[in-house]
Length: 401
Image 1 (cartoon, helix red, strand yellow):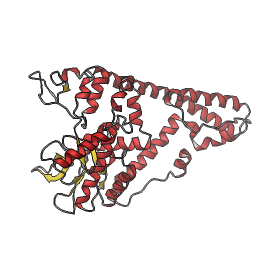
Image 2: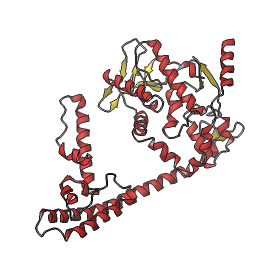
Image 3: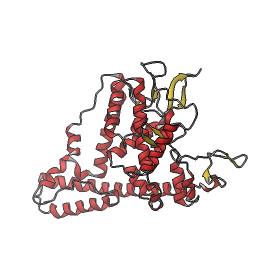
Image 4: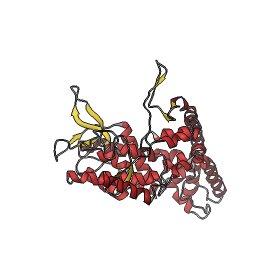
């Protein structure tokens, strides 16, 4: 159906606005690329060959789902064999005979292309795996604290004295991997601080600056299991942030470290870890408020409908440009924001990963957890959430203070 739709609507996408010209050009590029892909790797799906597979002599249908790449070349050979078997039943000089001959020629090329593609992707996967295996975390361990240092100074050959010591941190993915690989002891994971704060009845792990990035970035790869300590905290962090923004009036939500509207003498935007003060361990944490669209993308696994509505609202407010959502909208000077018209690759990348997870059943999480080392360490992520008694104690302590 997709192939038929593609070829039935093959007219170029046209833009009458300079602001959307790049988008139109990118759509046309993708249509061309998809057309070439079908011709080079799955020619039996071209609409011109549909009469072949509807004919009685061939008597077969193309599977609705394409086979995985590792089996695609064999699938092409199966189609080739069926064509050879059916061709003897086609009348000489008939259109079906001609179509069969043409498709068989294309399949020979497709078979070679599929084998080459499989070999290339396998090579890339093996190389990526070797790089991951070569990563060494052990030298970053501060043994006295059983935590990872924030960095290593090559010239002095010394570890920085500061450590990543919060579970609600982007560094928890590195800590998890270091334990999974056996580079550092498992107890290091449990040395990550689990201090909680209670905000309007919601218990949430404290992070350094209260950013969406600290809480949600690792969830792009790491599964968060229902009713666990981490999942409950992510739920709370997103809800607390969304509610926090209500005090600024009717503005979109989504705060994280990002660029802001103040520029230096060279016109470069400033950058800061904007966060929710009530969730931040750091004294003086502030929200701006500066709203970063990528923060809403990160929240998609927790508040799907609300996040999509929030992104639609940002779009309606013209927070997008030729390369997608702008970096941020800076409300520090009033109710009319200054748009930070830049795009940061890592923020765009996180947005794309979050969107892909949404559309493809958390594919990046499933890939990550398919690794035997990761799978063997999953129990670390099943840590129980705070009990009702603990929550009650937190509430009473807050009231006493």
